[in-house]
Image 1 (cartoon, rainbow, N blue to C red):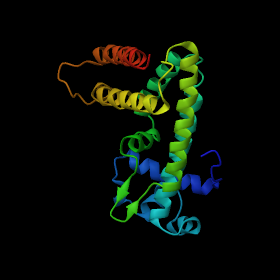
Image 2: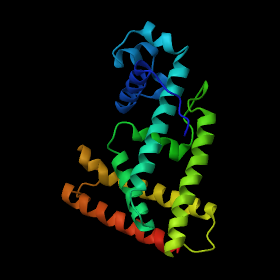
Image 3: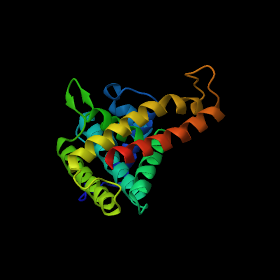
Image 4: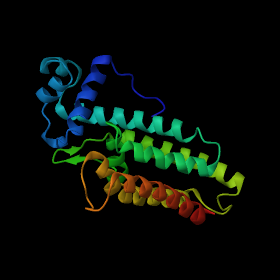
Length: 217
């Protein structure tokens, strides 16, 4: 990830086309090169000038956006200078990711690790290994901040931190999804209003941070 491949402007347009189609709810295994090219504003033959197959297009598109998303998240989260602030910004990023075009792929990869089809994996295994390594590096960076402050127990291991934080993040997203659905005009709970959902989301943030700090300290 630190040595990301440099893509041409047209390749990035193709990646944008893939993400636009996925955002529309199209199943990844049903996408066709002609549709991807059209969504990218170019012809099918042009797409084949840069990629040899649909599988390569999808693999490179997901890899590119996963990498970009992760780098953006790290920059945002470490704008905070306290461990509590890091946790709060991480949750804000996860919430924001539910409303943005590309970050849904990041959440999908977090929860399922790989996107699969009958023809194999759409995520580049080498990139996933690098992402795992960088994730551990950034978690260790956060852990050292927490230990220096006394927010994280001195005997807590990096794997302890990973299991705890990722577990809480997963639970947070699970609780957040029905609350955010009303912002898209979908009422999961009949009595849930937009105002109520916003207050519940605020409390969910506070509760998740409080429980994480209690568990890690």
